[in-house]
Length: 199
Image 1 (cartoon, rainbow, N blue to C red):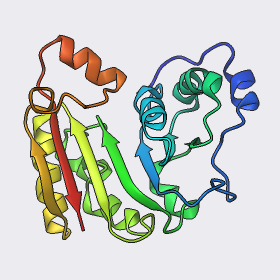
Image 2: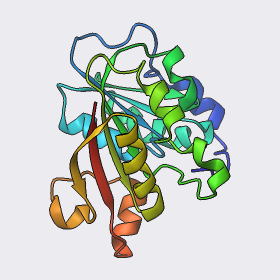
Image 3: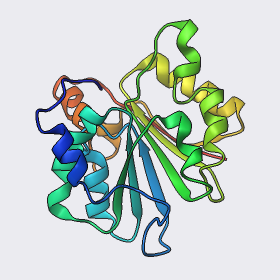
Image 4: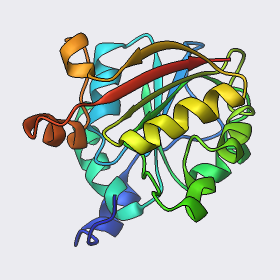
């Protein structure tokens, strides 16, 4: 998700007091991480709903993270922190700490020559191994059929077992927490695909 830089970007980024650091969280609760948090709606609502789980939202683009920071800041939640960085470098910051990884509406990179850039490619799956504290658990949501098919194959080839699968999530799960993208797709009656993979 790319957008124009907000006029107050530098001020917002400088004032944020919930960046993830080596100190981590002040408790031993499990940590869940979302790559590509966008404007922060999903990770914020998850943190509010599950106070006994720690959450980290990761966003590559500072301009987008600015919107998330402004949305999250008023709540001052002890169980929610963010990182502004490229997902491919996460294992330099987070070493065997997380219990679950969310990939919500990731860029599908539709051209075959860009397949390695997809967040469920073997290259990324290998990098995620260093993030998990024990069992690897990935949950993915997407509107893109081709990416979903690719992900199912890639995950299983890498040793993951698909334990949950839906081709129309909103019909089957009323407890689902939506992202900003997801709400837009829902209004357009676009079916959302979902999987949970475990290794």
